[in-house]
Length: 259
Image 1 (cartoon, rainbow, N blue to C red):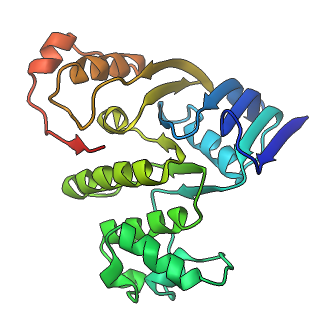
Image 2 (cartoon, one colour):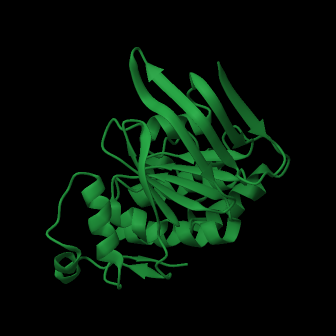
């Protein structure tokens, strides 16, 4: 029988999974998973389609159940998805506080939108926002809840390359300021290395490997050691490269994640 604990008080690890199983019919999408995420830790989750990444994130967000095992998460948690999921009939600030019933709600919305660089778009409707702006509103909606755990499900995947660079910088800035534990689901190996303290590779619902990313911040794809880590992660994902040395010499788009 499943056991999901919602923690009000701080604990050694905001996220703790022990032998967690989630299955659909006879298929185990999450298969006996053990995982801890420390307070303030930024973890990226990689894996092929169907490896269980989004199912795990949805379970942590409370949007899906587990079938067995123990899962502990903080009560204060928020999720940002690939699509901003804004209500088209509500202005930006009202989307930020959707479902949040507190006396100073508008003040909190203004503060959150200011933090993501949208103080000038408080009254804008979603249809008038660019893709990057809409995703910033979604991020503000997560931050306004002051989460101890922030769940990001490929939130930058639909953005153009330059907007993604800006969003990478923004998420690192906000993470350092608010210090939530973060779990980022992504298919982008470079993104995972640029942003995370630790990268976990999921395969068949289990952790195939996890790497601590000890590159100094600010990071970019051309710094020493980046391409070697990239080659290792790609190999774990079934994409072979000739060698780390060859990868280091290949021209790349330099992208930055400031901290």
